[in-house]
Amino acid sequence: RDIERDLRLAMGRKDEISIHYQPRYAAEDMRITGVEALLRWNHPTKGWISPSVFVSVAEETGLVEALGELVMREACKAAVLWSEVTVSVNTSVIELRNPGFAAKVGETLRACGLHPRRLEIEVTEGAISDNVGHCEQNIRALREMGVQIALDDFGTGFSSLGRLKQLQVDRIKIDRSFVHGFGRLSGDEAIVQAMIHLARARGLRTTAEGVETREQSDYLKQVGCDELQGFLFSSPVTLSQIDALLGVKR
Ligand code: G
Ligand code: G
Ligand code: NA
Ligand code: MN
Image 1: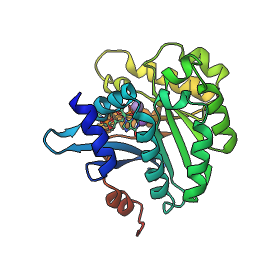
Image 2 (image 1 turned 90 degrees about the vertical axis):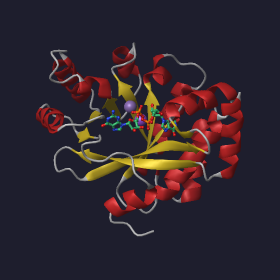
Image 3 (image 1 turned 135 degrees about the vertical axis):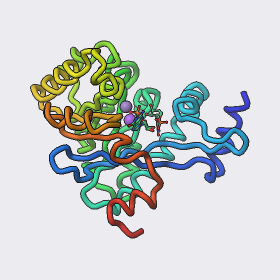
Image 4 (image 1 turned 180 degrees about the vertical axis):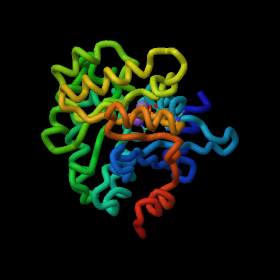
């Protein structure tokens, strides 16, 4: 397929694929505590292609490991100058199944000189809902190294509540679909409040993603959400823009 060929070419050339960075903020004082790395592809004729499209293509064609390594390396290099701030990298379940994944991440951290505490890996519920391949071993090994694990898009999968008992993660990211349901008689406020209570009871921190309005932000703070992320505060921005937000000169 054309898109597969183009993606291979783009990954070799480096001017079409870039990484944008979106901050997340402590609800308590709105300082930036972490930055999420997000892949972007500006195709020469098709324009911007969403990562939800090309990451799937990469997963189907064996390109996702190289793509993941590219993001991990760039994000860790970028984060070295951000003092206390954590960098979050999204990881495909295909990468997590690979027995060598945790060790590879360890090598990248050493090569970049980034402390493992400063890296967070975002995994989807799919990565923990079954233990295909080495997902569980990788997550344990990463946590033993000091890397933090966040459960992304929380609430959209199936067996998450049961699995949260067995599998230790550090943080859950409440899926934006719940946040967007606020004020629409959807019951989403109650669901989010319950998620936050559940997380607290398990000693997990919570981040709400997709916060777009002041009302959403106020409600999330009121029910004790730890961190907020979304267009209300900042959309994903370029490396130089995030450096500026963090007061860093590169
Ligand atoms: O940034 P945007 O909303 O367009 O992202 C769409 C989807 O692509 C999200 O689910 C996001 O997690 C995923 N995504 C973005 N960057 C990466 C990446 O570096 N690796 C993986 N596996 N997924 C990513
Ligand atoms: O699946 P994941 O949570 O990784 O998706 C991250 C994507 O969510 C990013 O690509 C980003 O563009 C998008 N995003 C970030 N903040 C908001 C927001 O406030 N509203 C919406 N609709 N999307 C957002
Ligand atoms: Na994410
Ligand atoms: Mn998410």
